[in-house]
Length: 368
Image 1: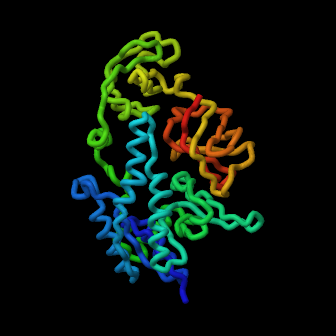
Image 2: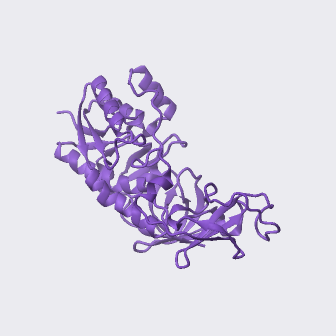
């Protein structure tokens, strides 16, 4: 009997090539398309209908069955509600991290098991390795450094990794595109999706406006001078440069900023006083942090790593930075950095690595 693998077919090139690779390896492959959002899926910004048609076309070319499953209720309850809570609290969440932990590797995994699957597979650029000496599964970075997605997968546990395959994690994106073209997949040249699935390419502030009340307040600089008015603290994130609304203001003689023409950046939020603080110059001290604390830590091995020297990312697409994990007891982890980290943002994930092994991480609570 062939092992049955259920592949999350998104209608993109990565999951499509993943399904083909698994079929080449002798697995019985079944495709599953997840619909995670339906509030306004007929709008110009949501591509789920086209994605479903693309996924069905791929399944037809590959000669595999495909099922359409609606996880919109689970997504709204487990991911979107938390997303809104975080923004209301002045933080900047990463819903892709929650989506992986709560939907793709819980709801999808459970559904696949009910279909008789031995394993599931996705098109993520990451790898899984079983370490015989420790008896545990490890999450490794994808071999293509520009596409590695281990950051988004850091909350997976041993039971989830034991049942997961990442077929394109061993490949570079250019090779995935080449394979797709060679075997005649209809999505070979399809652009990678960008943004959050339920927002798509739409203006972010316009989307949040539907769900969050905006309470305007003052924008002040590091000397307390009012420079303008913000539209609501939820609509700004630390390090933000565009869309602040004070582009023409010059800060003559700012003691710690850059020159008077240097751009302004969001640096702090004071929820109590409903005040947004901005500073001038990318290297302003308010944008630099040497220490962070993260909550709700999740460790792939099942427990925190021993205190010591590791590497970390405080945002996706950031190069690994040397760090010292000072303590990882319970659900809180404290880490320090010899080199200052720029615009460390509460609500984002701090993810820790030992070489190519992703150890896990937590949600940034504070930085200093």
